Length: 205
Length: 378
Image (cartoon, rainbow over all chains, first blue to last red; front, side):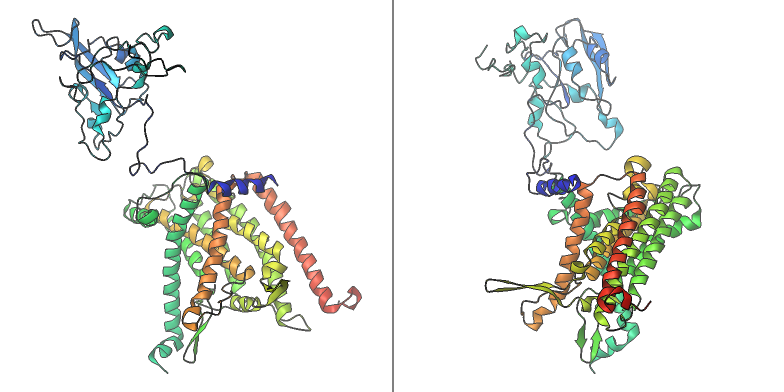
């Protein structure tokens, strides 16, 4: 008779709330720590955060990041460090959006945004180069597709929550402490609140 | 005689019209069925289902069909070309032919001429149905064999065993219907075997029982299902197996043998198989409705004749839809059976049950006709 209990179960489900959303018609609020496409950040003074250390490329499990570092030109440095990333490519077809590059980056140069609509009709276009990743001096990030109903370009400024939630070393003692360097356009991003139960980030630190 | 009457008195013309109408009806029904199935299964899985093409996604199947029409039809190198091309057609044709004997509404008159809403009123309709559902097996077997590849072959072999064993149960389930109908029609010597479907529907136009609840007079219609419930259940189960639908869809078990017999088919040839499956589902439901649930019979609520003529059609399609829903419900609920379970269920359960039921039923019928055992004309 257990088989017939199953029929009642499926029948009941017909009147339940749908768990899926008709996506392009209705957009869901994304989780705060959503892993979307990458962004290369700048300091408010216009210098690039990337120092071309290639740690992101080294940690990438999908091997989709390609970085070449180069000595900063004398007199007009691109980054505050010794070197800067003069080639920076991410193959979005191979990327698994794990965010390890973000964790590995010592200068918070590469972060993830909340934008995930990035379909292309050409495999070559899926390789995001420096030009598509790097934000300009005002904090605007170039995106291959224009803003539309699907492409909310505002989401490019939503830095992913992992960095905001933890101190850069990921140590519990630094929970809720803003250990974030100021970014062009965004300034100093606030720490994420309520990281481990308490509303740690609520008071301005 | 009016012009219209002249036309319908012409056997050739009326036959042609009916065939064309049945063809169009089945195609539309198929398109709707696929959509309904996807929506209902989505509901049962708390999903939304197709919603982009047309209102509530109702045109989704049409879009899919168009897509398949324009897709490349890949023909693998190792196929047995003749049989490979024949198989999809062989799947389609019986599916369409079976529907031709099913009356979808009450016969009506144009002048003197009676127009039946069934393309052909065969006096051996039940045999016709069984024969053509057997021919449909060939499509699956041929497709599996002619594809020249492992998975289709496995699907084809499974189909042979499955469909042949359930065919037996299906045939046995239909015998009590014929026997019972014969007792209803004839008297004394047991009547003649009634196999004409229109006759079977007429015979169900009676009352099974009547209740008196307060001032309400409730009549239970004399559908055969009330006398022959075991037959109905066995027929329906065997019908699910005949149409290769869950939980008997081993023939095309995606998780084990890719797509089974239609693995190597693409484009419109695949669409033909797909179409045949859904038309068969509709056919089995329609036949079950006609044989057991009173076909197009139903109250017309004393509507004026201008409107009342729709009611038989309405009842027929309503009942068919209910059975189609059961089909879909079963698919949404039961997991696929294992091959040995399928064979065990077919040969050790379904066929013995139907044999026992047939024996029991025959005994009761004979008892009612001839009285005690010693009076029987041995």
